[in-house]
Image (tube, rainbow, N blue to C red):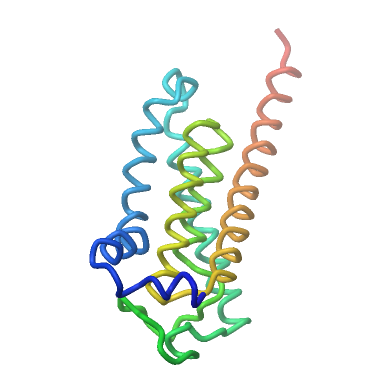
Length: 180
């Protein structure tokens, strides 16, 4: 934490990038999700709406899990627990630090996209990692909070994928068992 957060406050251009990564990159992921939805070849043909619906569902699940785990762990944010933290953004100290909600949302999006398209998925994973580094840089999360958020995001995306496979399996069985 100290190594990453120690870079904050030294260079105005780096602070701007860190704040953008910590705060502005998550809404940009939403825009990129729409762009990815309409450029992934398989989604152009039919069921184009599934990617954004799955991503939003996974992010809602991730955020719910984040609140439950946060309440159970109740880890204070770095700027509350440590001295000389270079905090560059406002963050509510009543919310627990572990796991990171921003990381959970970003990684939920990233893992859902990765399941559909490897190239877009890798880009989303890189951007999700930048969100996480940004949250540490600005002094509101520890690196372990980001890792916890990534695991929560992966778990939420897995749940959405599992439900999708279960439901589509039922539809496939009904089609194959129907009399022709």
